Amino acid sequence: MANKENPNTYKKKTNAKRRKKRLFYKRLRRLAVIAVLAVVLALAVKAVVGKKDDSSSSYLPSSQSSSMAPSSSAASDNKPDKGEFATLVNVHHPLEEDFDVTTREIKGTGKLFDVRAADRLEKMLDDAARAGYPMYLVSTYRTIDYQKGLYNNKVNEYLNMGYDQRTAESEAAKWVAIPGTSEHNLGLAADIVSSTWYNSHSDLTQDFEETEHFKWLYENCADYGFILRFPKGKESITEIVYEPWHYRYVGQEVAHYIMENEITLEEFWED
Ligand SMILES: [Zn+2]
Image 1 (spheres, rainbow, N blue to C red):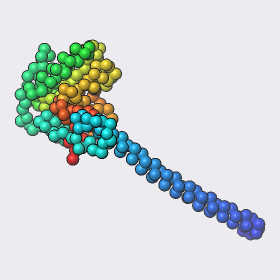
Image 2 (image 1 turned 135 degrees about the vertical axis):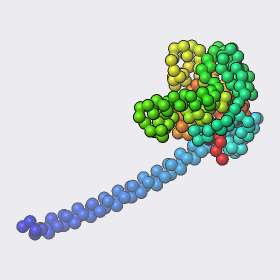
Image 3 (image 1 turned 90 degrees about the vertical axis):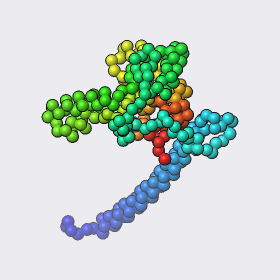
Image 4 (image 1 turned 180 degrees about the vertical axis):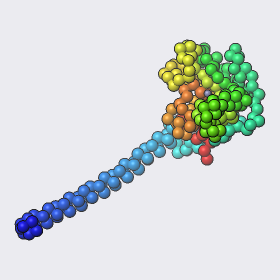
């Protein structure tokens, strides 16, 4: 009895099969429509985002006196030359072992900066104070030798814990920049926060971005040739966490280009 099927049940079954098949094709068609819609949507989003990029480039200074005129020029058309200050220093582009720079003290701080750009940093700090935002210079130039000392101490800590040389070095690098790969070794980087903020913080932390002092720095640094070097959202490119306090001198033209296009020094060096 179990093997013999009643023709009605058979018919019912085939009907059910057909229904299933129809349903399957119906679903397949629906999926195809969804896939096509997704592609169209993706293309549309891309077009809009692309337009947005173009429009932001029209905010570049000097190139367009009549900013109302529609601009077809891409950002790269107005890209300034790298000049003498835009040197790229990071873990992939270390300084030469024997790198040297002439520095001088930033007035009344005891901190050293590349002599060619020291007056620009002083002017920025003076103007900020005059505008009601007195700043505190936490760290500027650090010699590669000093960095070496910091780094070797850290490596030794790991060796003492029983790690082998290679592991000790890679672990140490997570805490202290490998000598020659820090912009502070270049003499053109400054960690800047507000005096009052610094008194209430034992370390540099990202909440500095919530201060009016940060806003002033962010909006005005390019006028003095500085950029916010490690911006938020660009961590995958800079490989450094967001640092609202770290400003890097690159020269005025390059600084305006980078800040107005919201890019990083790494991106500026591309192509
Ligand atoms: Zn720094």
